[in-house]
Image (cartoon, rainbow, N blue to C red):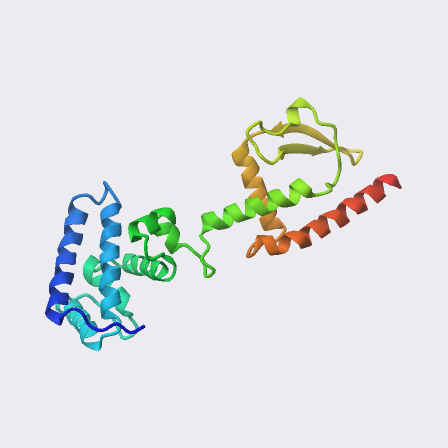
Length: 244
Protein backbone atom coordinates (compact mmCIF):
# COMPACT_ATOMS: atom_id res chain seq x y z
CA UNK A 1 0.00 0.00 0.00
CA UNK A 2 1.38 3.41 -1.00
CA UNK A 3 1.51 5.94 1.83
CA UNK A 4 0.97 9.63 1.28
CA UNK A 5 3.74 11.93 2.50
CA UNK A 6 3.08 13.08 6.05
CA UNK A 7 6.41 14.82 6.65
CA UNK A 8 8.24 17.58 4.81
CA UNK A 9 11.78 17.13 3.46
CA UNK A 10 13.19 19.61 5.98
CA UNK A 11 11.43 17.79 8.81
CA UNK A 12 12.89 14.51 7.62
CA UNK A 13 16.38 16.04 7.52
CA UNK A 14 15.99 17.36 11.06
CA UNK A 15 14.62 14.05 12.35
CA UNK A 16 17.42 12.01 10.80
CA UNK A 17 20.04 14.45 12.09
CA UNK A 18 18.59 14.00 15.56
CA UNK A 19 18.84 10.23 15.14
CA UNK A 20 22.50 10.60 14.21
CA UNK A 21 23.02 12.57 17.44
CA UNK A 22 21.18 9.87 19.41
CA UNK A 23 23.38 7.20 17.86
CA UNK A 24 26.51 9.14 18.78
CA UNK A 25 25.25 9.49 22.36
CA UNK A 26 24.45 5.80 22.48
CA UNK A 27 27.92 4.79 21.27
CA UNK A 28 29.66 7.21 23.63
CA UNK A 29 27.56 6.33 26.66
CA UNK A 30 25.52 3.20 27.14
CA UNK A 31 26.66 1.00 24.24
CA UNK A 32 28.04 -1.63 26.59
CA UNK A 33 25.25 -1.23 29.12
CA UNK A 34 22.10 -2.00 27.21
CA UNK A 35 20.88 -3.03 23.80
CA UNK A 36 17.50 -1.46 24.39
CA UNK A 37 18.66 1.94 23.15
CA UNK A 38 20.00 0.28 20.00
CA UNK A 39 16.66 -1.42 19.42
CA UNK A 40 14.85 1.88 19.96
CA UNK A 41 17.09 3.52 17.35
CA UNK A 42 16.41 0.72 14.90
CA UNK A 43 12.67 1.10 15.46
CA UNK A 44 12.93 4.81 14.66
CA UNK A 45 14.87 3.93 11.51
CA UNK A 46 12.08 1.52 10.60
CA UNK A 47 9.46 4.22 11.14
CA UNK A 48 11.35 6.70 8.95
CA UNK A 49 11.78 4.07 6.25
CA UNK A 50 8.04 3.39 6.07
CA UNK A 51 7.50 7.10 5.35
CA UNK A 52 10.39 7.53 2.93
CA UNK A 53 10.28 4.39 0.79
CA UNK A 54 7.44 5.48 -1.53
CA UNK A 55 8.55 9.10 -1.99
CA UNK A 56 11.27 9.96 -4.56
CA UNK A 57 11.74 13.41 -3.03
CA UNK A 58 12.24 12.04 0.48
CA UNK A 59 14.57 9.32 -0.79
CA UNK A 60 16.58 12.08 -2.45
CA UNK A 61 16.88 13.87 0.91
CA UNK A 62 18.42 10.72 2.40
CA UNK A 63 20.89 10.38 -0.48
CA UNK A 64 21.86 14.04 -0.27
CA UNK A 65 22.49 13.78 3.49
CA UNK A 66 24.78 10.80 2.85
CA UNK A 67 26.74 12.78 0.27
CA UNK A 68 27.11 15.72 2.64
CA UNK A 69 28.58 13.37 5.26
CA UNK A 70 30.81 11.58 2.74
CA UNK A 71 29.15 8.25 3.51
CA UNK A 72 29.56 6.03 0.48
CA UNK A 73 26.66 4.36 -1.31
CA UNK A 74 25.94 3.31 -4.87
CA UNK A 75 23.02 2.81 -7.21
CA UNK A 76 22.28 -0.63 -5.77
CA UNK A 77 22.13 0.54 -2.14
CA UNK A 78 18.52 0.29 -1.02
CA UNK A 79 16.73 3.03 0.88
CA UNK A 80 16.62 1.13 4.16
CA UNK A 81 20.37 0.55 4.15
CA UNK A 82 20.91 4.21 3.27
CA UNK A 83 18.90 5.32 6.30
CA UNK A 84 20.78 2.91 8.56
CA UNK A 85 24.15 4.05 7.22
CA UNK A 86 23.13 7.68 7.66
CA UNK A 87 22.08 7.16 11.27
CA UNK A 88 24.93 4.84 12.28
CA UNK A 89 27.66 6.39 10.17
CA UNK A 90 30.28 4.54 8.17
CA UNK A 91 29.98 1.33 10.21
CA UNK A 92 30.80 -1.17 7.46
CA UNK A 93 28.92 -4.47 7.51
CA UNK A 94 27.05 -3.45 10.65
CA UNK A 95 24.78 -1.30 8.48
CA UNK A 96 23.72 -4.31 6.44
CA UNK A 97 23.17 -6.30 9.63
CA UNK A 98 20.88 -3.64 11.07
CA UNK A 99 19.07 -3.24 7.75
CA UNK A 100 18.58 -7.02 7.65
CA UNK A 101 17.06 -6.97 11.14
CA UNK A 102 14.62 -4.25 10.11
CA UNK A 103 13.71 -6.12 6.91
CA UNK A 104 12.94 -9.26 8.91
CA UNK A 105 10.87 -7.21 11.36
CA UNK A 106 8.90 -5.62 8.53
CA UNK A 107 8.04 -9.09 7.27
CA UNK A 108 7.42 -10.88 10.56
CA UNK A 109 6.80 -8.47 13.45
CA UNK A 110 3.16 -8.20 14.60
CA UNK A 111 1.87 -4.62 14.60
CA UNK A 112 1.24 -4.62 18.35
CA UNK A 113 4.78 -5.75 19.21
CA UNK A 114 7.65 -3.30 19.57
CA UNK A 115 10.82 -3.85 17.60
CA UNK A 116 12.76 -4.17 20.86
CA UNK A 117 10.50 -7.01 21.99
CA UNK A 118 10.65 -8.66 18.57
CA UNK A 119 14.47 -8.60 18.49
CA UNK A 120 14.76 -9.79 22.09
CA UNK A 121 12.34 -12.68 21.51
CA UNK A 122 14.23 -13.64 18.35
CA UNK A 123 17.49 -13.96 20.26
CA UNK A 124 19.09 -10.63 19.41
CA UNK A 125 20.47 -8.85 16.37
CA UNK A 126 23.10 -11.45 15.52
CA UNK A 127 20.66 -14.34 15.78
CA UNK A 128 18.34 -12.63 13.27
CA UNK A 129 21.24 -11.83 10.96
CA UNK A 130 22.36 -15.45 10.91
CA UNK A 131 19.01 -16.83 9.81
CA UNK A 132 19.09 -18.81 6.60
CA UNK A 133 16.85 -18.27 3.58
CA UNK A 134 13.97 -20.12 5.27
CA UNK A 135 14.13 -17.79 8.27
CA UNK A 136 15.63 -20.37 10.62
CA UNK A 137 18.59 -19.38 12.76
CA UNK A 138 21.44 -21.81 13.58
CA UNK A 139 20.16 -22.16 17.14
CA UNK A 140 16.65 -22.91 15.91
CA UNK A 141 17.95 -25.42 13.35
CA UNK A 142 20.03 -27.15 16.04
CA UNK A 143 16.94 -27.47 18.25
CA UNK A 144 14.93 -28.82 15.32
CA UNK A 145 17.59 -31.43 14.69
CA UNK A 146 17.70 -32.47 18.34
CA UNK A 147 13.90 -32.78 18.51
CA UNK A 148 13.75 -34.72 15.23
CA UNK A 149 16.41 -37.16 16.41
CA UNK A 150 14.60 -37.57 19.74
CA UNK A 151 11.36 -38.45 17.96
CA UNK A 152 13.19 -40.91 15.74
CA UNK A 153 15.11 -42.75 18.43
CA UNK A 154 12.35 -42.77 21.07
CA UNK A 155 10.15 -44.71 18.66
CA UNK A 156 12.80 -46.68 16.76
CA UNK A 157 12.97 -50.49 16.90
CA UNK A 158 16.69 -50.28 17.63
CA UNK A 159 19.70 -52.12 16.27
CA UNK A 160 20.37 -54.33 19.27
CA UNK A 161 18.84 -54.63 22.76
CA UNK A 162 20.91 -54.95 25.95
CA UNK A 163 19.94 -55.29 29.59
CA UNK A 164 19.84 -51.98 31.44
CA UNK A 165 22.25 -51.62 34.35
CA UNK A 166 22.99 -48.66 36.60
CA UNK A 167 25.94 -47.44 34.55
CA UNK A 168 23.93 -46.91 31.36
CA UNK A 169 20.62 -45.55 32.65
CA UNK A 170 19.46 -42.16 31.31
CA UNK A 171 20.03 -39.01 33.32
CA UNK A 172 17.13 -38.50 35.75
CA UNK A 173 16.55 -35.02 34.27
CA UNK A 174 16.01 -36.19 30.69
CA UNK A 175 12.50 -36.27 29.26
CA UNK A 176 13.18 -38.77 26.48
CA UNK A 177 14.72 -41.87 28.18
CA UNK A 178 17.78 -41.61 25.94
CA UNK A 179 21.39 -41.91 27.08
CA UNK A 180 24.87 -42.28 25.61
CA UNK A 181 27.19 -45.26 25.83
CA UNK A 182 30.73 -46.04 24.69
CA UNK A 183 31.10 -49.38 22.89
CA UNK A 184 34.30 -51.37 22.36
CA UNK A 185 34.70 -53.63 19.35
CA UNK A 186 36.14 -56.93 20.56
CA UNK A 187 38.55 -59.19 18.71
CA UNK A 188 35.83 -61.82 18.20
CA UNK A 189 33.61 -59.30 16.41
CA UNK A 190 31.27 -58.65 19.33
CA UNK A 191 30.85 -55.25 20.97
CA UNK A 192 30.86 -54.43 24.66
CA UNK A 193 29.34 -51.41 26.40
CA UNK A 194 32.21 -50.10 28.50
CA UNK A 195 30.83 -46.79 29.77
CA UNK A 196 27.56 -44.92 30.09
CA UNK A 197 27.42 -41.12 29.79
CA UNK A 198 24.62 -39.23 31.54
CA UNK A 199 25.60 -35.70 30.50
CA UNK A 200 22.55 -34.08 28.87
CA UNK A 201 24.58 -31.52 26.91
CA UNK A 202 26.64 -34.32 25.35
CA UNK A 203 23.44 -36.23 24.62
CA UNK A 204 22.00 -33.22 22.78
CA UNK A 205 25.22 -32.83 20.82
CA UNK A 206 25.01 -36.49 19.84
CA UNK A 207 21.37 -36.11 18.81
CA UNK A 208 22.24 -33.09 16.68
CA UNK A 209 25.09 -35.03 15.06
CA UNK A 210 22.79 -37.99 14.42
CA UNK A 211 20.27 -35.72 12.70
CA UNK A 212 23.04 -34.34 10.48
CA UNK A 213 24.33 -37.84 9.79
CA UNK A 214 20.86 -38.99 8.80
CA UNK A 215 20.54 -35.93 6.55
CA UNK A 216 17.85 -34.17 8.59
CA UNK A 217 19.25 -30.85 7.41
CA UNK A 218 16.62 -28.65 5.83
CA UNK A 219 13.37 -30.10 7.08
CA UNK A 220 13.89 -32.62 9.89
CA UNK A 221 10.20 -33.46 10.15
CA UNK A 222 9.91 -34.23 6.45
CA UNK A 223 12.77 -36.73 6.64
CA UNK A 224 11.69 -38.33 9.90
CA UNK A 225 9.37 -40.90 8.29
CA UNK A 226 12.02 -41.92 5.74
CA UNK A 227 14.63 -42.36 8.44
CA UNK A 228 12.32 -44.49 10.59
CA UNK A 229 11.83 -46.79 7.61
CA UNK A 230 15.59 -47.02 7.09
CA UNK A 231 16.22 -47.74 10.77
CA UNK A 232 13.54 -50.43 10.83
CA UNK A 233 15.09 -52.10 7.78
CA UNK A 234 18.53 -52.01 9.42
CA UNK A 235 17.19 -53.46 12.65
CA UNK A 236 15.47 -56.23 10.71
CA UNK A 237 18.68 -57.10 8.90
CA UNK A 238 20.60 -57.28 12.20
CA UNK A 239 17.98 -59.56 13.75
CA UNK A 240 18.08 -61.88 10.74
CA UNK A 241 21.85 -62.01 10.94
CA UNK A 242 21.75 -62.87 14.66
CA UNK A 243 19.09 -65.52 14.14
CA UNK A 244 21.13 -67.15 11.40
